[in-house]
Length: 95
Length: 361
Ligand code: SF4
Image (tube, rainbow over the protein chains, first blue to last red):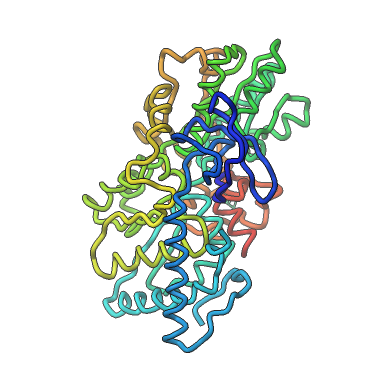
């Protein structure tokens, strides 16, 4: 039931209670009643047709940088290139 | 957002978890972590995350799928309403959940008016389009879903929609966690706390478990790297014997949660005892409409009492939801019980433990 992907607000109705979000060019109607001061351009997490929280993009970027730096440490320590691999197969274990 | 999916960056986690696992093994410790949330369960199965864990770390699924904890008696009540000519509006998963005798899907095939919605707002539209009929929305879910449903009710009231009511079976996550933690047969050392329930209730909601019960708590997002990082954080807390609440999903979750959502929930609803599959009746673990809004309560409007239903006696969903057995340990798993013919609710939703285990095993 939870869609974790952030979607971007691209339109807000006059009453401020509903709007439209975009995900890769696909548009969905969205309820905006549960978030504070929604603005066009905000990324929101949508659940059951309602935005339930805005995405803090500074935090999101920080997390990305952290994952990258972890990969960098691994690269340095192991001497192995951390390639952009395909998604893990189920059951992939510690080898 | 692709970055969160860059699984190559998982390599360092693999190494760190391995090292932590060796430390635990040296100390003769085995720890058990529980992922509470169905969306975590699904991602863990899909990305093979159990395979990353050392032997000294066990990961079990909790009760975090609203469909899975729904009592068959609730489905019976919805079927009863459909039989009386009421239009039933529901999230799609609910139509395949077995009631005591049959499902909403079969009721629909037999002519019952069952509409599936992706958003509760569609129930309002349905009621407006069918002014001569009564529409009942099957209001199930945890905090994340409760808030949107109450936003929908708020709209319905403002738009004076009079032919819509809710059959509520809302459930709250913290009381269920307290019950699981108090169960002497289950030992939980760490909680991988749900991402979006936490967006509503806030990361601070888990403080009592860490402070009073010494349980490691990490709020984690749904991306595979988030989950690995979350598990790494939990194991780290347990290795260093320093249980606390860590919010690793602060890009969405705030310490105090979403005050707008909390306010709207509190305005319309009040706590009640609720019955959970596997966990039994837990005080103050559900929400019902406040007296002032009882007009919107389908049970009152349609003079209906939801009675406890009958579970398939061989279905072990209760044990699965408590993390006591793995889905494959149920004798029906993958034999009589399959995703397209589920015998228990855990095989219905893609977030159910049995469905996730079946699909990715
Ligand atoms: S496999 Fe089917 S019958 Fe067994 S516990 Fe899971 S849902 Fe219930």
